Image 1 (cartoon, rainbow, N blue to C red):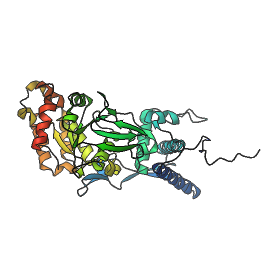
Image 2 (cartoon, helix red, strand yellow):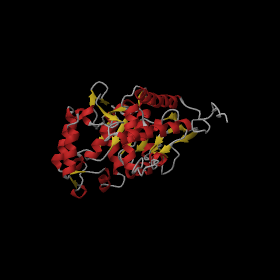
Image 3 (cartoon, rainbow, N blue to C red):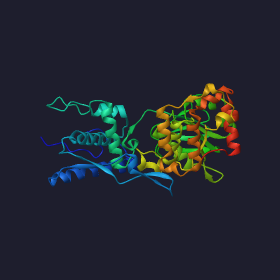
Image 4 (cartoon, one colour):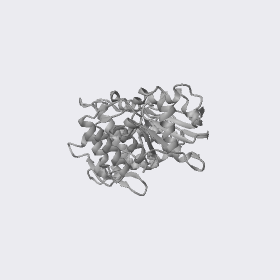
Amino acid sequence: MAKKKRSRSESSSGTPAAVLTPRDKKTINTLITLADEIVEAADKKKDPHLDIPARTLTNVKYNNTARIIEMGKGTNRRQLFNLTQAKAYMQTLLVAEGTKRLLDQGKTTSIRGLYYLLKHTIEGTKEETFDDQADCDPIIEDLEVTLTTLREELHVYASNRGAMVGPLTLTDSGDEIDCSRMGSGGYSIPSIVEADVIQFGSHRAEFILHVEKDTVWRRFNEDKFWRKHNCILIHGGGQPPRGVRRLLSRMHNELTYRGQKLPVFCLLDNDPWGYYIYSVLKQGSINLAYESKRMAIPDARYIGLRSKDFEECKLTPSVQIRLNEQDIKRAKQIAGYPWFAKKKEWQREIKQMLDNGFKLEVESLISKDISYVTETYVPERLKAQDWLGD
């Protein structure tokens, strides 16, 4: 029997092929190039390998001109004919094949979904492709950094974590959204927020206020802070996920107020973790240093909470949280980051927190009044232009 010729409208799996976006086509080409290099090595009877950029502090540098973190040239070689690396090598190719399948079909899946899509027992053995989720996640990150692409571009997404409200309209996958009419929960920020998915419409915002936690965001939303001060109010559920970071970057760069980029202010806890979140938003992260240009916001400003606030806001000792050894170690690490090391105001900020011996959560301001943070603290800081920037 003659072999059936595949239709141009079908993918390699036999299902109808998707209509690819320019972004999808570019991503598929990077996957095909990766596969071609492996085949070429095999044809030449060479040991196939992958050179994976090292996601470490020692392999990133701070670009003083661009004010962002950039990835260096250090790599770790992963080889097929190395017994200690063979499994990870094959897992990397398996993830690449799985994402290619998603792109071909125009479908997306969660990180958890991709794990189950690829997990199986290798025929003729008792060996599993992946033992558990923790075995798969780093491989996805390895593929991202090797291809210099985001997992969202590979059609793999994380769960939604973050919300937004304010005087902004947008179109999400063809549906028009008015972010000023989203109720108490706000607009749930998706993992994939690129321009082919989300397009911005009209807005009246004068700035963006990013708060660390959902609990604080709810206070601002309930008090209609965004309406009184004409701003977009957003949170990332703690350490903001990529979708939130990318959306913040897009809004800052694509929306304007009085002819200037829409300012971004960050309201975070006065502790090493709040400082780190600000660092990631402003300069980029070590793991995603290759994507800092698309995610980092060098002009982001830290509006609080500050180490001086215990005395300035006349807080009581009951709201103090004693610094533990891990906090102290983390604070010193952050102070030593190249992008903080030469900034005197940040060195003073971190030193004062260490001298205080305690940290403060934004919620500690509730001890003054339930709406002190929305009606007094942030408005006064904005009026006085009292924030930390460069």
